[in-house]
Image (cartoon, rainbow, N blue to C red):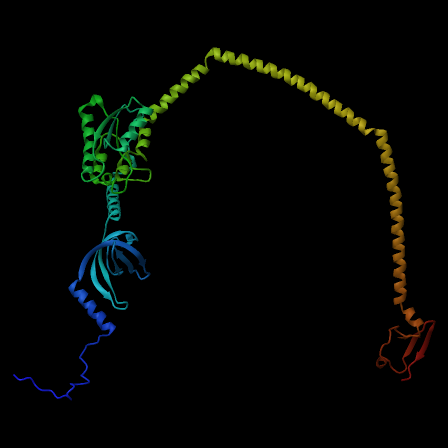
Length: 443
């Protein structure tokens, strides 16, 4: 086929039509992503750790589920009847079941939570509380079934690991406080899978041993181990161990972990000790206290020996005699000093001189009193004269002496101040600086 010829003026289409394309809005794109996630993924199980937990007043709970590399927004709506929702907290390891979707307002994918399962310590704590409530309802923790420990045990059973720190602590305390105490070890594992069954078996074995060997009776059983995490101590929270302690015919002491650790075994046991060492001290307290009493009794008997008491009485007699002599000499010295002080004070007083001084003081006081009375009288006289002068200045005579007069009604003596109040024919009396004038009103 021959190649089509082109003119030198054929440049092709200079302005080609725009290629066809589909433009989505943000809402449309987000809706498509949401639909894709819900169809392709849907409901899933996912595990992680809770962070940024927020509980709203509406009852909805928002939080982030994270692992070492990623995080996922989650929401648990109030309408979802999910158990243990009140136990959700930051740092809690958790297993969730829910639906993957997109919160379109923020364009953020999230998990709508439908189910919650706690993991790690949280799950163990829930199991602990459930078993505790169950056994308490059955009466395994009832105070009235607790048995007292024998005061002077001769032989005890020890349920613990033969290689742990607890057995060393117990043996150290027993050697120090009651070396004659016999210990029958029932070795067992104290943590890990199968440990609970071994602990329960050891308790039952000691009971069976006591029954078979009645002449070698066991006075009590100590169940113990050292401290650790909740997972490490979990064998002592198993129901099989609680049942074995409850069914034991021999009193049981539980000493698991440290002072802050409490296990189901502690609640069922007849006595709970804070630590293995504390348990050993409780068990040996009777013998240890009795030994101290005997030692103190020997000391008291030695102190109560007649010869010792006689020596003490003689020594006390010597002390009393020496004290009596010291008291006598001291009393004489004190009386002499008091007498000398009185004589010295009497010499210093000299009654004649004192009386003379008092007379001089009285003479001066009388003179001073006369002067004060005279001055006071003079002041009062001057004040009276000044008052009289002010009264004279304010009196009507002074006004009249300057040419003024006072006109009065001749009949009543009332002072007239307004002409309008005077009537024709009315008799008037006018007082001058010297004398009075009688007159009659014409108009």
